[in-house]
Image (cartoon, rainbow, N blue to C red):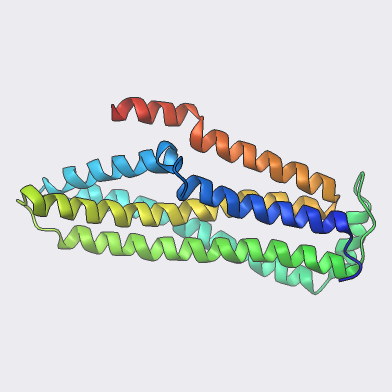
Length: 227
């Protein structure tokens, strides 16, 4: 690891700080409820209340099936990405030569190249775990929809709606974390070229995610609809 420069260590530290820090900001901080994830939960709660008042729930089942199909697509895609990265791990020398020929690229050692590839592999392994856990939770949501009786009123109905909305939000949040991993995976690719580019692209990903989660026209419209 002595071949890893201070600049590379700083770039890696910034990447990990931004990835973990933004997850905390968008999910656990006091600002999280004002973002897209908080607004989505309120609409999921409305959906659950409407669903409990319907005797026929084919529409709800179709909506959950559509969500599961999207998650399944990303999970399957991630498996192929992981398989490709594992294959590249066994052929580091051509990758290092290719990266060295890119404009503004820095010469790197095999050991550092392996560190970069392992980071990229880790990002997509995390994404895969997030997608598969999201898929399992959407399966549980389907079971809860099928098990929810009709004609519920009062406090039992509200508790059932809260339970459905919470499971729906938990599944959706895991899916969102998987998508976020893809964003940061794209940033991690740039480390093969230049650590400064890695820092800049990581910062750009942070700005894009913040704009979409806290300052996008979509969020403004959802807030307006929620009033």
